[in-house]
Length: 321
Image (cartoon, rainbow, N blue to C red; front, side):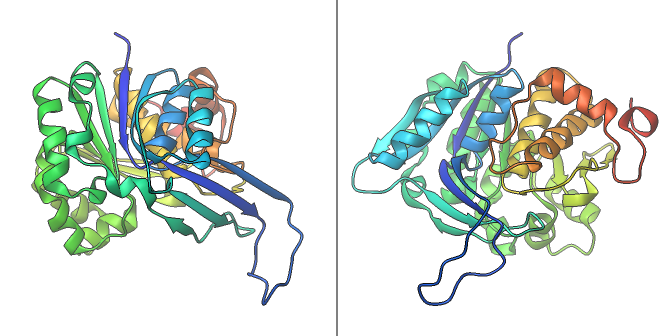
């Protein structure tokens, strides 16, 4: 069966500048190696990598009726993402970020939430979602758990596999804000900082279990250079990160989500889905922007088999099966 995914939520237009070690004082200027722009955000960025990996992807959300929105939608369409479900808003700008990329690949952000904050359950294309196989909700905290549940619950009732990723830093208040949505999620895909902050747990494992106790079916946590940890009621799976030269960490979490969900859609076991997620993240990390890399599913799978993980072994040697 074809995997058809609706990615719903945050659509962001990113401008990346590298390398940046400091912001010049006054009206000073610094020469840099590269300035680039592209689609990003927990819905739009994830949609790009899903499309690269062979899923049929429709993305839904809101962007401004402005030139930035035009460019964002054009770029998404260029990757094969169906943007017909994206709403255009007058009087509000398309969400955008400027990202000064440090030499080590990390980056602060200057961000405008823009049209993303205008989207709610009344805007969601419920009929189209019900006809999909998967719904990925990017940034449910932007609308709150009660509103997110109004989208997730009918999707789940229609047999759609549901997942979500987060934008906000972890905080117990955010967990309370999201709580109504959690029982309607098959998969939650946060990062380690978010899990620890949301739950106040002393360890990542305890934090993931705390999220399971809120009703989530599976928690797949990204751990930066330590790879990913997948936790269900019955198992805990650690998957290492691949050893690559990191240029930019922008979009790596979205790429992991896309790879993991593509693996789930292909019927792969949780470990292999997480390996595909880590491979997608590693491929994106080697260049600038969330949409870096001209890879497909076959390329990502070959990369996962051949590329050493950070302890020097390959996936095939130490982690296959």
